[in-house]
Image (cartoon, rainbow, N blue to C red; front, side, top):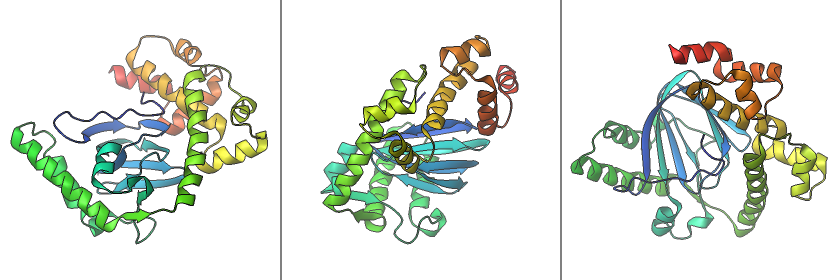
Length: 276
């Protein structure tokens, strides 16, 4: 499972992480990383949640996830994804004042990539994915700098110091809770415990968490559990009851309902498909 704070590793020959992968109803719960991320859909459908806003992407669409933005991804059925992650230090080296920069579509809440200059660059990068030779890597590096240039030209906006301080305060609170859940998700976690960690009144904590995470505290805890459970289902011979117990999900009815909502089938059928 990808950790709540994802440690992004770059290709030693490239100043970025660049991969193309296939996914089948895969859910990555809310997490964050310092790298800027571009998710580009080559085939299929994906829901990307950034904070509390969900965007559905189809083939040919992409979305930009800024550094330290809390986000999750959920592929709807079978999908093929290009994932590009630009490390924080790389961006800071090339963009002065990067800590006060965000990238967003200034022409609207979301526009399809066919209407701008990034999609052809991403298509060219995808075509070079299997080229591991020197020339291929040089072409990829060239495309990376072209892409960065377009991002700065068309997508970059500056934020004020006050806005950054507010964002940092909210992020630090949520990051603390996410790390706590990562370490204790197998236990019987309570809202009162989580609120106490932030020294917040319980009702206020619930509103705060839902506003910035797009789901309740318990829904998020269960999404983390579900991700671990799914991996064990696919990779071990343990019984389902053993797996649920291992990861702290003791309500089978609630688990089964959540599993079907995410993966579109029952746990037993999904496991049987994997075995076959």
